Amino acid sequence: MISLCHAVALPDLTSVSEARRALQKVAIPLGMDEIKAGEAAIIVTEAARNAVVHGGGGQLLLAGSRRGESEEIRLLILALDSGHGIADLPRAMRDGFSTGSTPGTGLGAIRRLATNFDVFSSTKGTAVLAEVVQRPTPLPRLLDIAGFAVPITGERVCGDASHWVQSENRLAITLVDGLGHGFHAAEAAAEAVQIFQKHSTQPPAEILAHMHDALKKTRGAAAAVAEIRPLSGTINFAGVGNISAAVLSKTLSRNLVSHNGTLGHVMSRTQEFKVEWPRDAMLVMHSDGVQTRWDLSGYPGLMARSSAIIAGVLYRDFRRERDDSSVVVVKNNNTEL
Image (cartoon, rainbow, N blue to C red):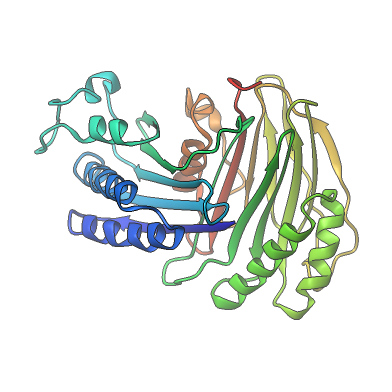
């Protein structure tokens, strides 16, 4: 599977063209056709412009994946700002409504062009998500999964990486943080992801053991692996190093423990933790580029939104800005359960 992520700062309207160029860097390697790429370009333009005009600036995150030469392509476009929020969201969705010097067609155009659309707005800012899907798979999606990995300012490659493999009733997912940042950190993370792909059907602790052996030739990394079985209602987790993870629901809040160590260098032990996965469960995993003291209780309604929106808000409001940052969120897609 090809997986790409790109982030673009949106300080002013001149950055809208940079956002469109960033889209090409993601859409072309994914093999997105001209029609879908054109729709995505319109979405990027409108989303970036809205973040600048109405939100005072922000950031655009692009995340794309392709599972095979002729299989599904998914492109996530997420515009984040830290403005005052949208006071009347239903009204803002109607064409012709605008609080700025725009025609007022932005959100409506994005919703019409996107395969999937979501938005969350509060006094802390707005997150607008558009997903463009080419050749959608007919298989039901029991889980809603999204993640972003963004390099520290000044680096062109990211030392954080995530990957997942989903079957009918099992999701295996990993989040890796290469030691430090830059090329060598990205090299270690890529090696760990490759090993995960090769051994993804094995239990989490065994996958980490394979990673440890493979990463001895690299700088090393922290990593965690989770195995979710939504129909059985369980999650198994194992981690080594500074990867944070938590399972949240209305009745459960459980931090998942990663043991000290660095894969490829020092790993005293691995231990799997098995906990309940309720129907309304959500898994949040992130690297140490994101603060550990986040709390979603200050964001009423956010947990009901899509995984990509939740991951984006956590990244926007809790990234440390002195290291690569990555967040992955997994939720039950309750319409399929």
